Length: 526
Image (tube, rainbow, N blue to C red):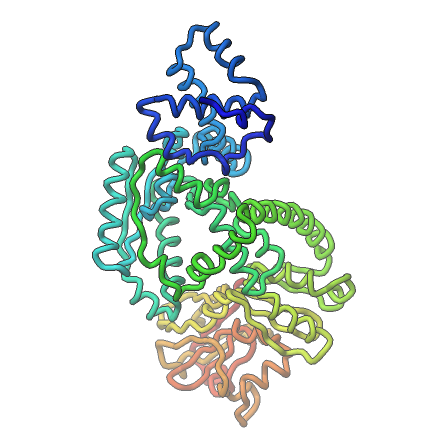
């Protein structure tokens, strides 16, 4: 019997206050009076009508009690289901912006999040494959995850890719944490699979609760507005279709669908920062605000809108004071200081190189001081020079520390992105060039193979026309070579002796003389 309280006008249905959808769904296989009573009550609340009116309409169209319960229940389920296929499809189209023909590779761990995402993508008609990484960190448990993932892909009838990593050894070799190692390994492999197998997008199962963790983690690291925005539904070819749902809603959906998944025992360990946030901080937030995920999601959306506006302003106001050099960047100091809030502009310009707010604040304080200071980001370095801030990726410095040899038969070599030609010419009739960028050497004085490397502290040679040695660093200073550019010039050695700084100067001991029979000419090409 329906109680009188159900007939009173009430607010619209709130899915978080309705009976557990999963338990109702499981009971639905044999509809009974309790289901009918619940369904009638819910539709009365929804339509603000009476039970008599509902039953009259049902009688007119010939529905019996069980059929009526089924109609009402299905209608309500489409609205209160934690993640409906319609809502998921709309999110994929409007926020993730996936095109029907695009192929999706899903990063599949076997946990509830990836299981639900795989199910939704498949039901939504997407062309997907599952990619699973075994990081060999949890012994038999890791192997069990891999077996589960393979079996799940077979049941879903989609392609499956898997790989096994020696994560601990990789972390040791690259001097990174286990978590960083696992991230680098999996994303490198995902993109390799996408390239080899023809997949357009990589999907991860990050959700709204992960978004909260990400934003809090970013705040704790001292991130700026980008950190407050957190993860986007789409970044390039990386998509996150589950950002429309919370962890609780995902688990509710999985239970309703009677899906099976794997539990990662390491998630309960608080030795990782993210686990501490998840297991310690988030329960406190939920106690303060049961809908905290929705609040953070709205914050992320709002910050994203502000970010778009700010990016347009930054681009417009810095176009005249910045200059791109390959993957590097030159920022005019005077132009930067003339802008309002130069530190904000500097942070936005340096963000792609991984500079934190704290480091940028230190840089801003150094802009009007002495030049020569170098600051470091996660994947870049910046030099405060006399008139400019010179920024370059760390990869470039690694290129400059490369060492290799030049054989006697070589006709060219490359160093730090520049190419140099090598010619062997007969000294008879050869005219000495006055261009100091061209190295002209007595070939008979050279001991092949020549070794090539970048500048190091303590390097010295005998400049052309001098009998006393001089530090290479002093030559750079005299020629006003910027600090970052010092490593761009290759140093050529014959045995232990520096032959020349290619593109700058030649050692007097290897110069061309009247007795020279063959000249080795090294010329910068580009």
